[in-house]
Amino acid sequence: MSNLLPAIEIETAPNPAYAVIWMHGLGADGSDFVPVVPELGLPDAPAVRFIFPHAPAIPVTCNGGYVMPAWYDIYSLDEAGRQADEAGIRQSCEAIRALIARENARGIATSRIVLAGFSQGGAIAYTTALTHPDTLAGVIALSTYIPSTALIAASAAPANASTPVFAAHGTEDEVVPLTLGTRARDYLTAQGQPVAWHTYRMPHSVCMEEIQDIGRWLGERLA
Picture 1 (cartoon, rainbow, N blue to C red):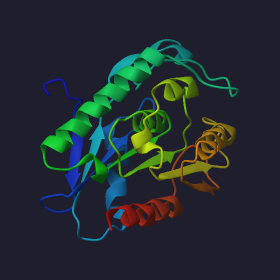
Picture 2: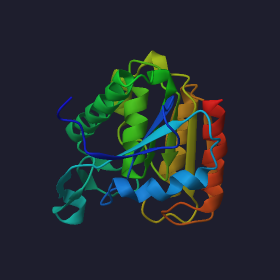
Picture 3: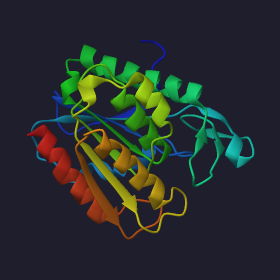
């Protein structure tokens, strides 16, 4: 696995039994959510390995072609639906699958791995999880959306049809409007996916109440 994405890793204790692979948003990097780990309030055991990969730097059309860390190119920010590069989405999903395989090789079963992501990273968490052939422990989708329901429908994995989802959004989000978050929620619930939906009075960011709710939900997955 020599072509693995570079990543920051944090273990809450030695010999982790679970893993969380957490994808950052557009223009950020893997360090973005590192400070969240101690704020989650997770128990001392079982130990968890948090992996925060860095997306590659690519030109992003909607930002005038500016080169920045991105999981895929975005052609348009139209609220009716982000127009995204589906080939780039698939490529990033495969990169995350390689990280899942690396955790399997290190002794952590897929059923003990959670995929998490914020904004564009959440779009990759959604797409990777819902098309992954092996059952995951859960999905954390923050201030995000589903970039292509057609892509998911074409490759939907029965193994993750019932995987629990924690989805959250800010009611004052001007970057990824709340309507995109609720559209993803409604799509999932229509498919029978169990979704714990939360909203917070905040812009395109995270807040302490949200982090605490994530910690409680994640703690249930680790029990």
